[in-house]
Length: 192
Image 1 (cartoon, helix red, strand yellow):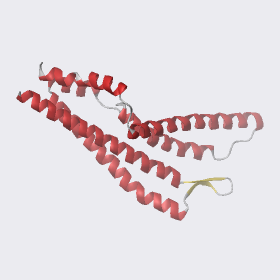
Image 2 (image 1 turned 90 degrees about the vertical axis):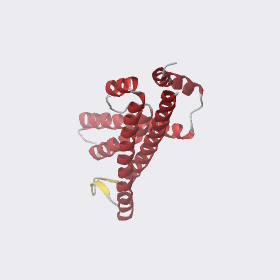
Image 3 (image 1 turned 135 degrees about the vertical axis):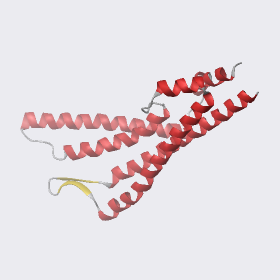
Image 4 (image 1 turned 90 degrees about the horizontal axis):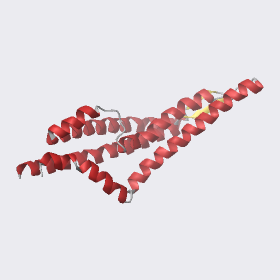
């Protein structure tokens, strides 16, 4: 068997084996956070519709909708980021990467490993930057909104950003390890 065929085929084989395998605890966590993000989308939709209905029916808005929506959007992004990466739905040049792997598997996997390393570094930087902000928001009682009308604490969203950045960094690490292994397998196959 041609070494290039050996590398192109594992994706389909891995998908078949992954469907039969029980998902790991980490995979369940990542997909659970994604589900929580989807529930937040639904709740946000209900809140916006309720606000529109209250304005139309009673000429009275629901206070804090703009603040809640702005916080919820950030929470949704970070709750679903790890799952987006896990299921390979992150924006990237698939035509370029897939073609590159087909033509030059070792170099293609090295390029993907570099992409994953940069993603890991970016998420690590977000994690490191968010930690002190979370502690400050908790200790100082930071809030968003207008005193007397509506206020919401900031720390829960910063905690979600911290967790989302950590989970996404770990997912990048898993992809990085897989690409490094694939690069080694291709290298050994080409030597034989």
